[in-house]
Image (tube, rainbow, N blue to C red):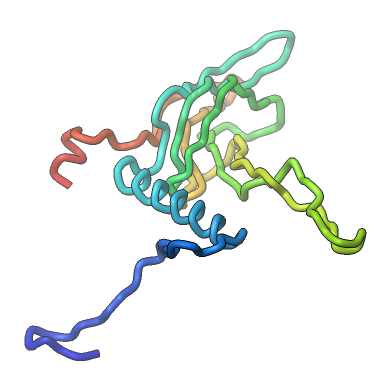
Length: 191
């Protein structure tokens, strides 16, 4: 490291790699992949910086019961995980609470997971041995979970708390619910 007279200098590089192409260049699969990865990573960086982690809309939590069953239902909505990925819940989802749990407070969390590849297609090859199946699509996977300790980390979005009373009844609350920042709000304007 060299100094500029005011102290030490350290040169850093961004994790985002922008692909460049020259006129007449024949683009390969890796070139398209690099371009798409750069676009996705740029969008995720902006979402993470502007909104943070949490529920953007919907995903309301309600306790339901019927036919001797108890469950928690999460309405449709949109959330962003800590990596800036968009989680779109397009239909209400339910999670069963008919299992033995001690009285106390629990957290209902949405956990983003590794993307799942699907819709595989066979590649073109000269021989049967050269042809292989390759995934052509992927979608972000996530799961709903009820956990006994308040989670943290970029993959966990707290939707609300559940309190199990001593007599066995459940109460849903919005306590600890994680919501995204809204641009222009007082908490963001001064940041």
